[in-house]
Image 1: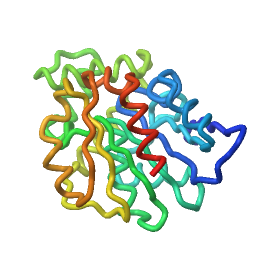
Image 2: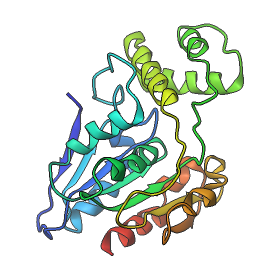
Image 3: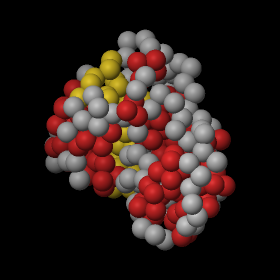
Length: 239
């Protein structure tokens, strides 16, 4: 069962819950709790749902390679059956892009932070990644970087590392190839001014008529931790 934290406000506004989706090799706690974002949204009267992605944090190791739509559908189910607002960062934003396709009548406001305009796992050789995670030499810098991220996120536990490789395998099989925004409401994109991962994001913004791009200080990790990102999320969810 997916590990999930729920923050319940003292004075609820009656607005839909907010689903927060974290990035690869991170966790709900790291991206949303430690940064104060979940607490700020709850203090503003929102119910906040913070899951750990498959194989991350307290969630179980995935038994098979599931594609992005299947992972996104399982995460959306955690927010109940009614309307929901969504904030995703990095991989979480990539999964959030799928949600209007799955449930256009449910998904309301969407914030896509730190979104890469291309699929970062597309060029990976999964067999080489699996070997690198097991202690072999990575064949290229990208494989080495992802293997190091998996090692850190898995805590050195081989079973958990293998599960993250399976997640990568599933995402690689369903690459991010945006062709148009399916949501009823244009999303808000948030990108760090020094975040090379989001280079070219303007091309994705153009696929969603009416969407806004907010640039905040910081690189890929620093942008998420900054006050400007929190301010952008609060503004997007208040409209």
